[in-house]
Length: 194
Image (cartoon, rainbow, N blue to C red; front, side):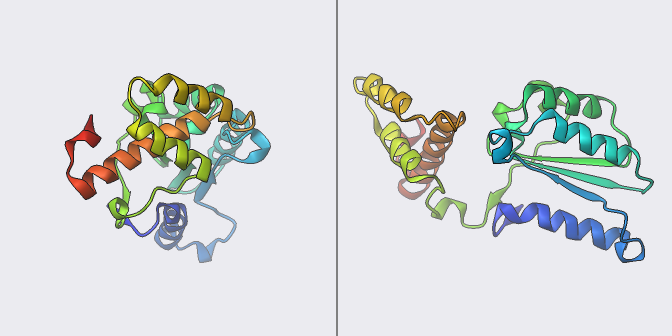
């Protein structure tokens, strides 16, 4: 599947479910819920967010309910545990969609109970990675660093890591991987796959 912009997916899911269930007849029934990290929770998805939505949807009498979790890799361990219980004992009318750019950061138990689809934005390979300028610069350095220069670069990354962004290192790695993939696509040089 290709999308103009992956950030459109939650909106499209809401529109899709509204159309299917003709919600104009009963505007009090919401069948699509979006869970995202926020700054208040240190850019994480806390267990309270998962428990609140699960408690709420358990009380709804409708045929299908969609829960979209954006940036699922930011689920706290306790939020993951709460979600895992629902994944282990799913109800037929629950549909959970977890979106992440880094599926390897989800627990194996979450991935093993999920169908995995890889989605790319249209013209993904032709675009520059979207990243904070500092992350982008460090990713470019990491992409081409020699083994000899890796320890000083690691020190630079550690010193650059803001205390307010615990995912800083992962964002650098994600951007580096994206740069490598796109660089190989543009140049066909196998060095980018090593």
